[in-house]
Image (cartoon, rainbow, N blue to C red; front, side, top):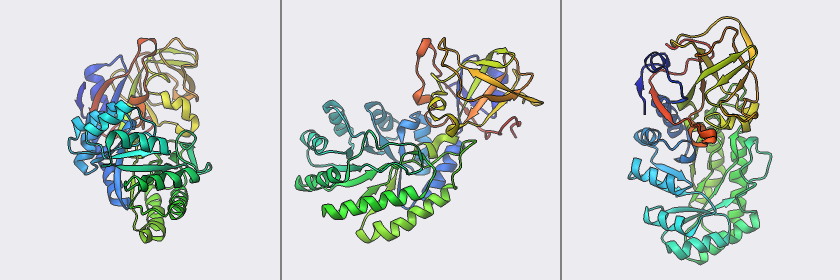
Length: 386
């Protein structure tokens, strides 16, 4: 951790960083956490894979989010260290015996499964004092940027059989599904709840908990989605009509929608050419997801000079390259930057709080692990901070 700064301008003036810096804004994390806790009609988990920094976990826990979706041994240990009393849901549906044993020893009580083989594997290691969260695959076309049912999730027949096998073992299963990451259509959640309830009825197994997954969107420059309040209203209506009559309570596990605006990435211009800039971070670092999401995940950004002052004036289109020797290391869209942008200027990309740090690699021996806390909000495209 570099330190805590009142603004990005102050960080630049004091540190003049030549390596990329991930900027955390705990006050923004706290604000969105309160929005989820007030709006979602059930238990809110945090999907740790989006950002496992201890300060993120501690900030969310301080606001009341103490349940966590974990998917690896590292995430389990990080939660236990940062939030000792946190409740963990091991929602990776394909786990090794040693991973299951670690989770058992760390007090994990909920485990995702999407087939009978995984269910029986966990039962053989963890005994019968745990809750299998049987994952249902959701059909394509749910309005999400990323479809998350191609790799995990049971078809209805396998889902029903797994629920019934869990009951035969004496377990009390819950269920889960995921409508896909960066979901733009609230009705996808209603569809998921409806399909899950139909399968539950077919299985004839009593269910008390339904985790409707993540997928809540962050609002990038090109995002065309209704506000979170609309998502919560649709989910509450579906809960009242479908889940509540069956005695089922809801949970969700937001990642991107919860923490994206709690972080940004400060990059430096290492070289300016007539129509291109070479940055100290790129698609193999903190901007990895931009490569995959392209226009769907177009990041807000702003430009400052080497003293931290906003760069204003006429704009021009620039190709933005990253620092590695790979020719593919460039952003998938042009950046509109001040025409007089120069070596040593800085570009701050917002909405990197989700996936920015976690997806960064070490290609060419380059990494972006430096972190600083910023107390001011991101100010928007080419605007000074308040």
